[in-house]
Length: 282
Ligand code: URA
Image 1 (cartoon, rainbow, N blue to C red):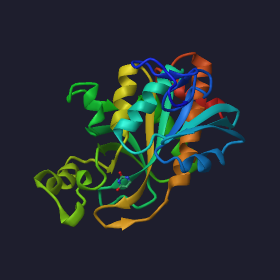
Image 2: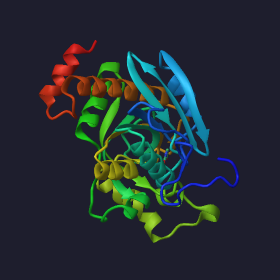
Image 3: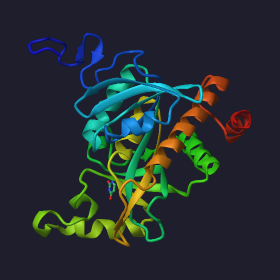
Image 4: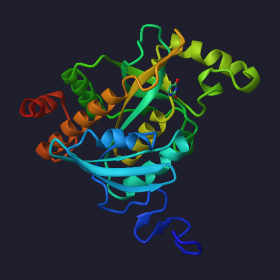
């Protein structure tokens, strides 16, 4: 956008492109991967047969390409709910309907080894942003067909994975029970990790709750697969462990979902429909 250029304040669009992601209708396929980190777009496109960079504006770097014959896209969301909600709002307006987050997460259960994939069935809404959209009681749940497709993909590829509830926080440090600057903590941060462990929550991350809440409200399909790069009980942190695997699982899950859509012309309604698609997919 040139300085001084004018647009609508309520629906900012610049020469046909959404104001933040700088993409317009048809620019990106309806099936997209959502990493948080713009730096991960290259790692994603390197796993596709064909790839083309689209835009890079603020934290939103995008690409499109082909994975095993499926037209596929990727766009980074940046960290946390606010930037993720902007990406979803703008992607929905340009026709994207299936979104799989590929991220990293910090396990909070002792038996989750670094590198394990966490497939989120739902997310605790400590993200802040989803509260701008719905009652606190509104659940942040993944789409069942996206969860099934992610599980099937992890099984096919033979990667270790767990399925369960994650907690999406609005802060990496104090919100995830890490000490703040100069060892700051308060009553909530001191208790959060322990409380969530007792509740059976698998891990901390920062975007799934926003993605799931907005997707359910807008009738989009969403899922999330994250690599557990940290374990907060054993205090291990292994940079990048499992990230490549999350990308492969998410690619494969999108291929399954796109094939199902092609076959049924709508979202999956049953496991038998999924099985009928899987039988046809090599
Ligand atoms: N992402 C998070 O939000 N927390 C972690 O501990 C690791 C990755």
